[in-house]
Length: 401
Image 1 (spheres, rainbow, N blue to C red):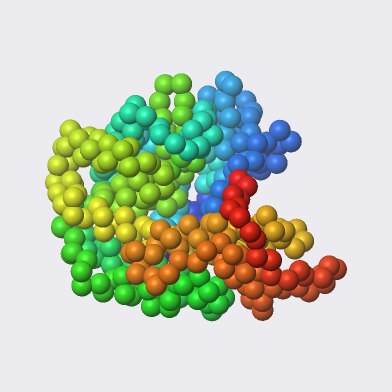
Image 2 (cartoon, helix red, strand yellow):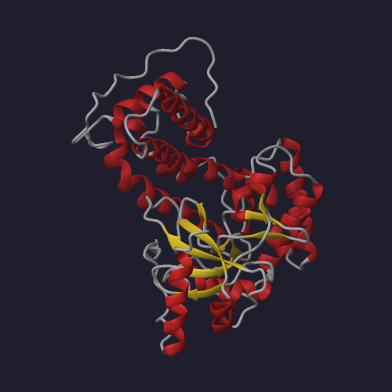
């Protein structure tokens, strides 16, 4: 399969040169460390939201009045999702021409980038869970249709060997291959005992790919995909909704974009059904009827894949978050991590044909064993004595948020 470019530090075009660009970089660096910065961190980037000065605004030829900008710095993370375009800035040049609400990249300095800032509240803050309503779902449907309309020939060059439209089965096979070859297998050495303890066998993704009961996908035209439209990546303003954070965008089967959205939004059954209807209607209105062919048979395949591939990053992140805590994690931290692990394994159980789903007590003990094992947190220079595995609890337990 074609190998995605490295994620971080991202490969940017050759920086602009000249006295003006030197001043832009110096002023941008001072903005990045502004004392009144608002820090917004995600899985892939840390963002500093700061006021835009008149001087930098004039040099960038943008409007400074009451404006803020976003200083966007990539994080070193475990690779768990594909990134086929190493420079988000290059993609945003295209996307922002066709979707005016998408924030622009004002400058890409290579090690970090400066973006315009979309004012509003993240949907994850305004509506962290539960139904989002008809109007919001219509906005999402319209977004997907407009994204599908971005001309493919304007997008950055795709990796050599990338699946060609309309070869949807090759596209899905590439996604499965990435999950196995770039996520599961490279990290199995470190997480093997944890994966095994919670029931994730070494060959589960190969078995998923080769399952004879799974239908082959219907050919469909490819288009630009965001692949990560969930509540934290949606900014709700007074006049419109904007979808931000395009670093994981790719070119492929539009049903993959719909599937990741349906899963990550946590819709209830009624809203999930309605969102599928609105998506199909919006795509047809935008002239993309051919992209909806096979919706009924192929969308369940992508939903299964999303649940299957998510189990690896979800389990790894739950474990790694424990090692990032200062000191030894307490019982509450283990319980919360165990709930995350159990939920991920439970959702992947049917697609991956897992024999059993661990309960939270078993997951807690597996996590404790991993944290205090040879490949979890190294206990060098530890001044406290590690506790034993979490004791069995009685009665139901609801982890904190």
